[in-house]
Length: 240
Figure 1 (tube, one colour):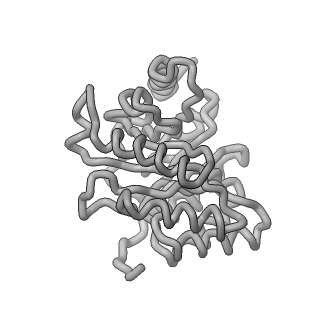
Figure 2 (tube, rainbow, N blue to C red):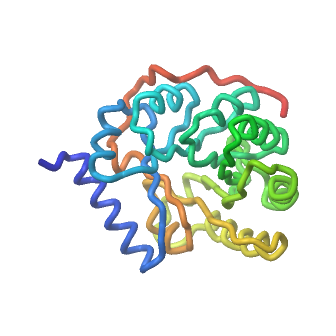
């Protein structure tokens, strides 16, 4: 019998397919705060890409979920956590690289595993102070550093979250427009193909219409998040 969660997942998959119009678009089910039992419902319905925002939660779930799950780390990442996150063997990618220091630490951890890892450079397209990511004009040096100096990292693309206000517009989104234009510039400067990761529960269909290759959908699949997260670590401020 199909569960309500599986029905919601199937609906999102249908919307992704319709918006993609024949393109391959990756759906990442963001399971932040939700229990493993809920993830397994999605897994049993065929979902394999899952996203987590917190290191402790990702580590805990990766230990008990099937090993063919493709994990995406999509949260703000402190330099002190890079090695632990990168050490997860079935980590598919890290989507939130925003400094050379973090790229270097992740590369070192993957070198020890002798297993390359996909990474996205996070770009702050909205310019908000509370958003992580490099400014659009600073994306090229970081992408170039990863491509040229990190032998165990594969530059998969660029990622943005964008502003909450812009996500409410069903027809246009300047943050999405900015990231798509930046991809064109980077692909030309770096002579390589890059993916774009943008779009969440409120705006993933519009993001796909703009050209997103990777969407991160949580609430629409899993429902409202539990109030407390047993794995959430304390946030600290660090100089980077």
